[in-house]
Length: 205
Image (cartoon, rainbow, N blue to C red):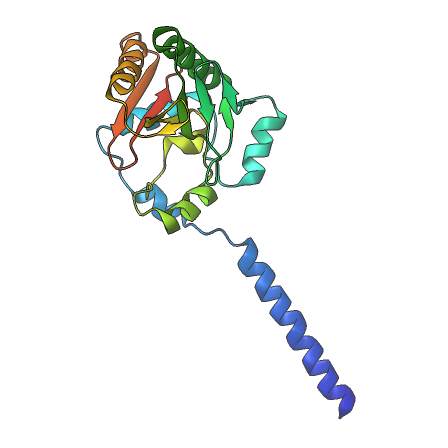
């Protein structure tokens, strides 16, 4: 009887561990449901541009590492001329090479014109990063985001030179720089009011 009870307890322990492991490894998103969400007309060009870099939707850390290993993704420095990257809790400091170079050019042009720097608040996100973000921010995208392809980044328009407060002069200057690259056919951008940032997506021109 003693051995029988021991066997039962051991079996329950193994089952519990197996269930826990299965739960931990299960994705926190439903890809089929995410794909059903239709993008807005304003956002659709960002997704269309994203698909031009031959990067599949980034689901998790493993998919990001694959593109890092094959040289597709470029590491974004924590600071450069004209920009700083804030601590990233729900995104990763990697971009396709063209997006990284575009960020550097946008920041350098902004620095030339203002002698200031802006703050990058979000970069590449996996689907797992995105569903974790939604737990703390209900405004996060419910569908596929251009951040999920590694060629979008967000620039705050209320954080300049290390200060977190509005500066209308620098905000206007930043938007003029973005408009310059938009008219040159290099990027798309959206001014997001809820997040107080410019969402920038690079085109595969």
